Length: 285
Image (cartoon, rainbow, N blue to C red):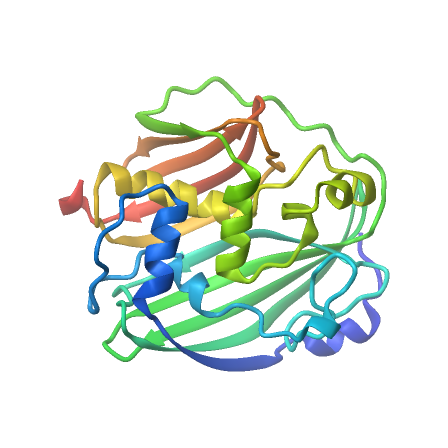
């Protein structure tokens, strides 16, 4: 079942092109945010997959932000008045050659899908955006990103299922804190209030606490892999948001080998918050 998305349909196949330089300073700041020791970041080093998110933040003036901190003036995401809430549902990424620190990166984006659905929590609009990134030293990334627009309120939906008991090959635990969420929001220029404004997150959007960013959970999945095999190139990666994770519930970031791939997931408060799957060069393992 679906519904009429009205003027939002005009956003299908919209495009945008942006350029950025992969300066080393944001890389050092993200390393610190992920709790790595400080070290010199050299031009020419491979840029870890997902870290291109540091270089294409939303460039929206303050007056164009909505009450929730999100933009209402995006060239790619439609403004649907009856679907004001937004979440990043997941992405699929492929990189044949890594981007490098110091690269001048060109990102070409296109809205390739607009899918309305009626779920247990109300109306949903899935917006799929394809980003093609090319660095001037030959690196590349293809990313398909799924964004969900949803109603401000709705039914409780289906209750989350407790995480199945699984034995991980390796894992890491950490406690998410408001400073962690603040630093990640600052690095990605993410003004969504659910990540730093506790009264708003709990009283307006109805969450149990501050919400850990879905992209941060995705980065923690690949950071776990990097801690196991430092510098191993990731050629393929998918991730999906499953349930929200809240401060201060401990995060368990886990991995299990599945043939040539790694099955990845994050658990929080007894539930799976995010899942992922990564393919890395076998010679690096």
